[in-house]
Each structure stands twice: as C-alpha cells, then as structure tokens.
Amino acid sequence: MSDYSFTPDIISLRAGERVTLVFKNVGKLEHEFMAGSEPVIGKGYAKDWLAAALPGGTGDHGMAHGGEGVRVAPNSTATLTIIVPAPGGAFEFGCFVIAHYEVGMRGRLLVDAPAVPIPGQTADASKAPVESTMPSHAPMGDDDGEGH
Image (cartoon, rainbow, N blue to C red; front, side, top):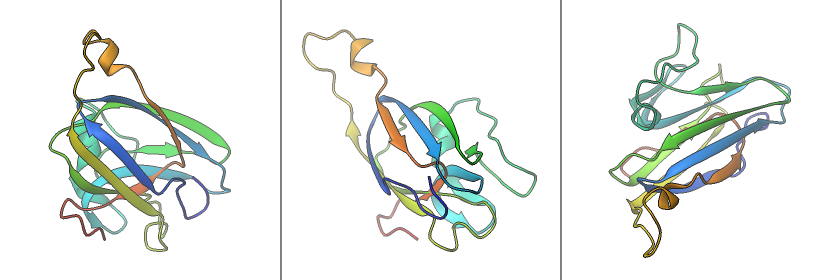
C-alpha cells in the first residue's frame, strides 16, 4: 500500500486455497483492504467477498464502514489468512478511507477454478499458506468482470 494505490493492483487466487496476505503500508496515511463487488462510496462493498473468506470475522472499521477489512497504519504491516471462497470470478479490492477509493485506490481480485490437490500430496500439504505481499486496503472489482 502507498498513498492512493496498491501494488500489485491485480491479485489472482484459486478457490479453496489457503492464502496469507501481507499488507505493508509504505504511505503516510492509514489505508485499508476490503474486497467484494458493488462498491458503496465511503462504506465498502455491498457484496462482501472478504466476509466469505473470513467466517466469523468482525472487521476493523469505524461506524461509517460496513463489511470485513484490514486497516494498516502508516509504516506498518498486517497479515490476514483466508480460505478463498467459491465461486470464482472477478472482484474488486479497495481502500474506503475517506476519498481514497474515489481517487483510484483499488485493484482487481481474480478467482479461478477450485484448487486441485497435486497427486501424492496430503490434503494438508495442498492447502499450505501462500504469501502475497501487497499494499494494504484496496477495493476489489465486481463479479461481472467489468470492475468499477
């Protein structure tokens, strides 16, 4: 995360895999990561993809926000381990801190077919965490593949 952008701005995952996302905020402002479709400016996503990946999660948002997300202070790092939910599709991730989404702090989250275990591996080995370093908080695209 940096001020008003995510790097990378496209994340590709497989449904069913366990993934650990590492959010590093190198900006001077607090940022957040939320994911889903149908963005609601200043609030989050009407269809919250991240909530499906975090059963029982509570989120880390102020009263004006809705949905699951991760907030990261300037010069800080946060990690989040999820199980990528099915179905696949194209979603968006973004930062809904005031005005960040509006100036383009968002990216695309692409989820393809369910993960297939590799022959000879145990079920646990096929779900080993995958680390992905990305900037904190970026909105995810909608599920119609067009993004907003």
